[in-house]
Image 1 (cartoon, protein in one colour):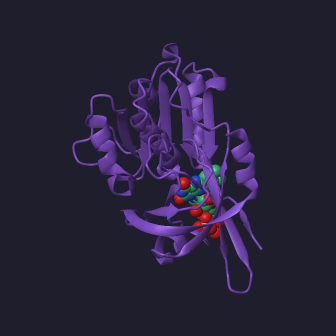
Image 2 (spheres, helix red, strand yellow):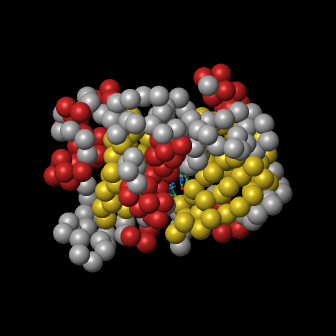
Length: 256
Ligand SMILES: Cc1cc2nc3c(=O)[nH]c(=O)nc-3n(C[C@H](O)[C@H](O)[C@H](O)COP(=O)(O)OP(=O)(O)OC[C@H]3O[C@@H](n4cnc5c(N)ncnc54)[C@H](O)[C@@H]3O)c2cc1C
């Protein structure tokens, strides 16, 4: 996989959009068929390149959402894109891209922010907003590989309508070997919630995540501010910094 990751960094491939799934009013999953796809691991991402008729290009990173463990189609790639208002690339991917269109991608990229299903220790996933995408790949891989590693997800999102993969997460959480899922809200919580909307804090972490004594591997992903806060809270709670892997969804790529 290390060699594939290096080659993936260099090779642009043309995928075809096979299906589109609206996840929320502002986010959509792109299901691509990518001939020659070398495979990927949960947590990795790709670069997407758009090219205008005059040759102008824009490149952005998107996490791989699907698991290839036990998947019948090894050339399938799923990306979930959250629309950023006034963005250059995400409005095109979430509004204009259509089934049958080609899409250039390069990857898989990344070797540190990955989870492998042969690892037995508990796993703590912490997501802010669309940062749940690579963590969903980990949850799906956990399921597909029948991993017995205990897994928990703490998912912080603006309001219930903005939550990605809502039904799938609820179904997985209800299953016997599924992850424990805690959703919290920053702006508006569903009726009946005892916790007022707000940012994650030490009390929430103590209630909804593995304690340091359980020795979990922690994966934190989301906007830069969220990731820094969550990682600081985990360290303050006693987790070893070396066991906390982070991925920041800040602005990515470039244009020319
Ligand atoms: C490793 C990695 C993985 C990523 N995975 C995903 C993913 O799975 N799904 C996903 O939707 N996005 C993901 N992103 C973010 C994505 O790469 C783009 O940054 C995002 O789609 C915005 O691109 P844009 O061209 O629409 O906006 P731009 O034209 O780049 O930016 C427009 C404005 O929005 C601000 N902005 C840019 N990015 C963000 C952001 N993420 N949040 C808030 N404001 C922003 C900019 O500062 C600018 O002011 C990932 C980023 C990284 C680095």
